[in-house]
Image 1 (cartoon, rainbow, N blue to C red):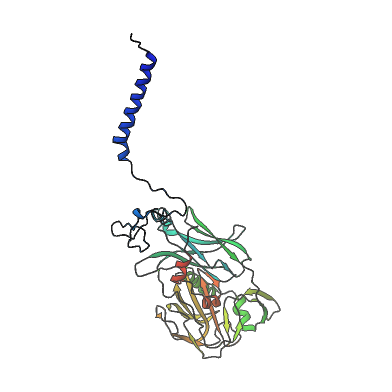
Image 2 (tube, rainbow, N blue to C red):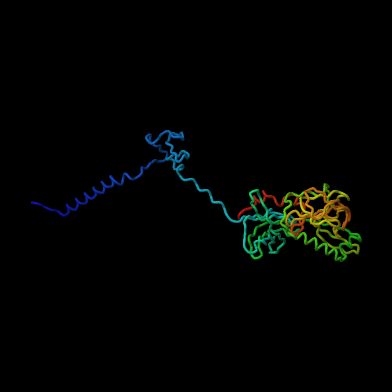
Length: 381
């Protein structure tokens, strides 16, 4: 007698199905899987998996495309090298020195080629903590290297009467602000002195004179001009060999007149106490933009060194150069004297930056247009 059980029939079918899939996996799927190397911490590969490689360690050394030997058992060696950080892009700016005193010059530069309305009229403006605009200067092109790398640069000076406080250098166009850069202006003390004037010098200072006014306007037109020419950005040298000084930059002076009245002013340069006839030489290479006699300053010479940067030599006994001459540093400009408003033979030496009075000593301590210094100070803000 036959006995057909549906339960037994179903179990047999399941066993046959499992056997079929196991056979299929062993024959077709398993051979396609890559071999794995399993090693615990400190485990060494078996002798069958090692050979003397070019690495010289006894472990198999694998080399691809002529590259360095790679140990496949060292996960550090087979990791991809780290990517180099992408170079920072964007305009770079510089305003230095970041700490300075009233009367000292400041160099401002930027490296990007801004374009658009007003881009040709960019200027650097010194703004105090109260928002007052104390000084400004126009930018000019300055080539840094033989490859033609160029920046825009501007030289301005902190006014000698500026307060000591954190300030801002603003790079701006006529209709927009490009960048604000921080600087710190420290406090500075100046000498005070009283100078008694005779009748002649009293009249020079106090008597109205249209010619004197015209000379002052002519000089201001020269000193407020910013041309494109760069004659020298190097360190300045003293204009005379004597180190004796009778007046200092920023001195607070009280002039006593013959009628008993007085007037206060601030000295704008350095007075060297040299005798009449001492050689006065150019402090740096430049162009003679003024060489003539003036009522207040006597025989005077003015040199242009950089766009907006000028040196002035007053009270000369004689002038040895002419307007338009291009002179090197150390060239004889004239002989010292006591012409104009002077109480005795001396040289008054002055520096102007975009019309602002600037301390000559600062120009003898630091070159205001040094290529290496500009490059080292340019950075993203």
